[in-house]
Length: 261
Ligand code: G3P
Ligand code: CA
Image 1 (cartoon, rainbow, N blue to C red):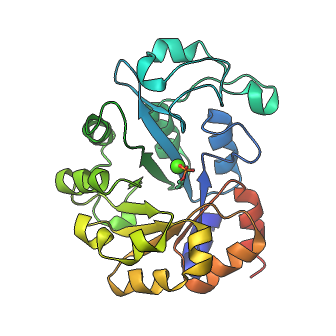
Image 2 (cartoon, rainbow, N blue to C red; image 1 turned 90 degrees about the vertical axis):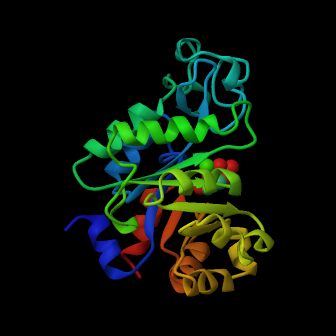
């Protein structure tokens, strides 16, 4: 039995590699995701943005300065221009290319065991709702936009933008979605219900002070995805509360801890 099956059968949280194994490899690079998969992650998380020529790339920030040797806003650069930059050396000294969503979906879906991809749309952005339109087209091309059930979905769209979540629900009603929030005010009210999100995504800081969010979400049939959980006390909190998905920069650390509890 592989780690993913063991974890989901035991009812413990499943492990999502946040930007890949980004504590050990440069975030959002192929190497970070390959390491996470090799370490037994059940899911992968990525942020997506649109380039000037409308390609979806896995980059967190609005600009490329922090994570590459290039300059400029992602939305004003073409994919070809982004491919000229090195997205690895700042972290580990090893060069790495920009990763497209297409490449990450291919890696995820071709992996030898079922792995889920949590795709975060960033808002507000220059191209507005075009992000959701092109994302759904891409998920359709990979045949993952209409899963048989949320539990069997290989893709989950997550966002701090309730409008972004709502656009996905309206156009792909079977696709699971998670409304992210870093305050209990956002996630404790009716926002997730209003946009039809299948889950809520509090930060671990929010969960420490508002653990009741998990039960409240479960009462309305929603799962909880918690980010970013790197410390043992927070792993324990998530396990105790019944958090379904635990996003971490250190998937191996969480995996090793989960086998001891
Ligand atoms: O997985 C959700 C989490 O990634 C949200 O915060 O800023 O790391 O994208 P951020
Ligand atoms: Ca993210």
